[in-house]
Length: 220
Image (cartoon, rainbow, N blue to C red; front, side):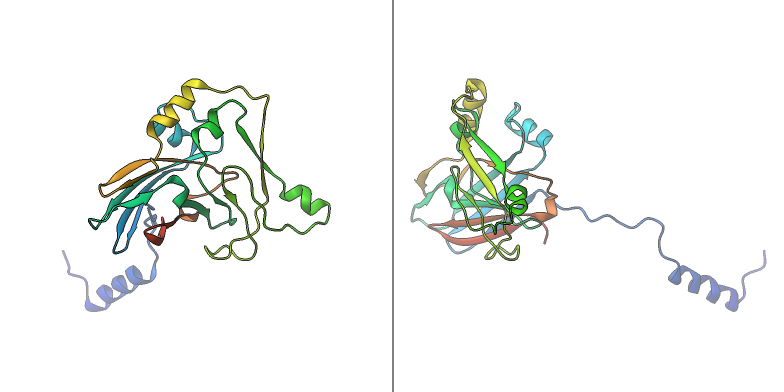
């Protein structure tokens, strides 16, 4: 067989370099993220979809529930106070910032109902301002950065006619993140109401507790 000439080899190499690959590697974003400082290390794993949340809890937690598994590892001999309220779930794409709901707020009698009031306010020509509500939902204005989130108008109210779900309440309580002072690693689940559609790359966890401030991003 005749060997290709140097000119032919050069042409083949040039074509290989100029033609883009047919299959581009898709970037995979991990559902686990971590951060730390001199006092603690934090490891968080998010279960964002309804199917993932149901599998993690072992039963259906209901619609619009995201679950965050959090592990806090103290790094000094001095105990640190930990609590669910130290954490905020941030959606960069629309600026929604939520603090965890308690099991009773999700599955107890007269559980909290979350409503999106942005469309109603815009249709009436009203400017949305910072609001608050039961369950620790936080809203703000501006860009979607952690310090200056977009406006997301979410309202919360107690549905006094809503019957509780004892089995779901028991499951949520059994795995919830504890509120305690500890010098040992501690782990548990946080439960968030999260409206709309969000991708993993849009999410972040903000820690604002006694051990300082940490931002845990799922896309690095």
